[in-house]
Image 1 (cartoon, rainbow, N blue to C red):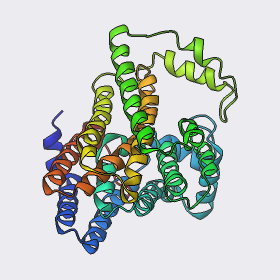
Image 2 (cartoon, rainbow, N blue to C red; image 1 turned 90 degrees about the vertical axis):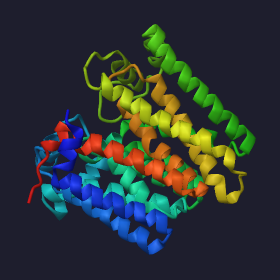
Image 3 (cartoon, rainbow, N blue to C red; image 1 turned 30 degrees about the horizontal axis):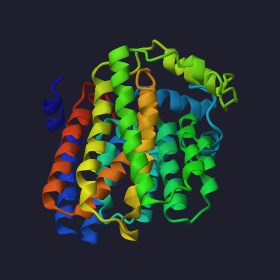
Length: 371
């Protein structure tokens, strides 16, 4: 596909370049006012090109619009929180407002997360989120999971980092999407406080991540997953299957949902986040000012382990999305703490490169603005 041509010779591509330059300037200036302006640019771009799209722009958009209009469970019974969310929006506005709100709330949640984690430059986080394919997809197709992931990280930041709310609040995230079950073990392992122990677990999770990915390649199917996951017989909302049965469907499905180059693109994004961590973490002596980096690292590497366990499945992207935002926050947090222009330029290069692939794709070229 002609990504560069599609990107450069489109209104959205030119607009993105303006936003990208504004974010780059805000980083170089190290100024809060510049960051606020650049963040506003990202908001405007996202609201216009994604929030105002018509119902036929995006694979699942029409299904969400039909669900909003009729209440019919197009993708299976929605989780309780998303059902309530939709009912509230149904009382406020029309389906155009519904799509806009799904996009807007994700960005608002990310801005709140950045405030809790003391990010000095929010604009680059917002820009990166909409530039990589996982963030773009959660803003356009996987609306339930996009809302769930950003809400989950917000709850995690408010409870596990700042202690604004009790840690048991993390259980609320499963009300938004089934994939959020991956967050529940965090409640039980949150007692680990030692920097040494957390660092050991991060390295251990990374080793297991590499092991499972390599084994999927070498062996194909490492073992019969059903022998293990069928033991998880508790029910989950929105399906007649138990958790184990649902996971077995994911692992044994032959649907061509995410195969080929996209599967490896998502894996590459995760590896880039991991490499960034290991390259930059050695520059810091941890104190209270850096404690959230270690906590973010633990969260991210734990979630990548979950992703690696499901990597062979066509549904593995669901678990990649769960780890995407923590990995993005971790990488950009390290870069901002390191505070060197060359690292900002490298980050912005990768962000732009991914944006060209995302907004220069033939898929995006079929999007239309509903105005």
